[in-house]
Image (cartoon, one colour):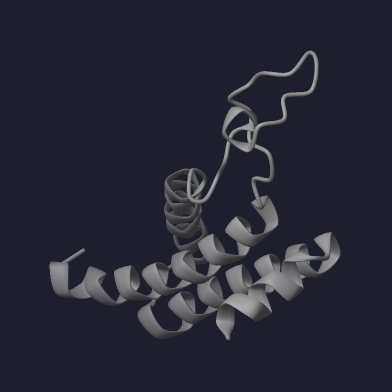
Length: 112
């Protein structure tokens, strides 16, 4: 069910941006309120987590033009056919928000 919702939201660039910003803001606000992080600290931690996950998720499900069988003239055969970047941004945001809250919860236990 979540996969269908993400695909439906990812069909619109505006909806994708809105959801990414709203979830990111909610995760940062939650860590500031519950775990006492500063706003700047929560944003910085979230930024690092989000970018780490997006680079980990980018290769998932990508087929190159060579694998697909159609290589338009003047393009690189290894270029992706349909990278699904909006879907990957949504999944990355969902996972990064959960990891941010978990990391913020573990910071006091670690003595940081």
